[in-house]
Image (cartoon, rainbow, N blue to C red; front, top):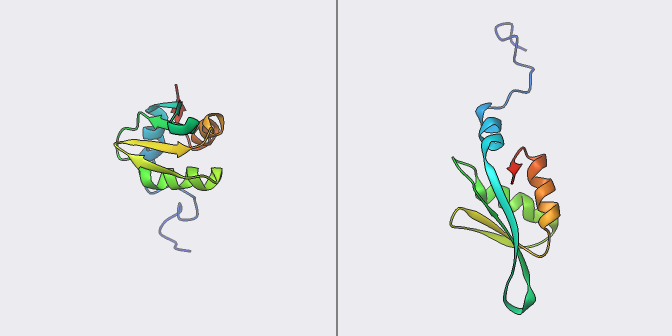
Length: 96
């Protein structure tokens, strides 16, 4: 422990404004029915430099399903709209 920095032991994120960026975004979560009756959850409305690849990977792992990141939105396979909304709120995002 350094004598110089009294805040060294505190858990302060590298960029505290990241949480603010997340909270000010209005995401849209909707389910579309695709070919052969398959459901796909689409998440739109990301702004700034949100790491969509990492977020998409976290969501897919939490849900145990597949998906992809395309054109500034995330697609999750299956009918998981309600659970996706919960997971995004837990991560600090605002959902319409």
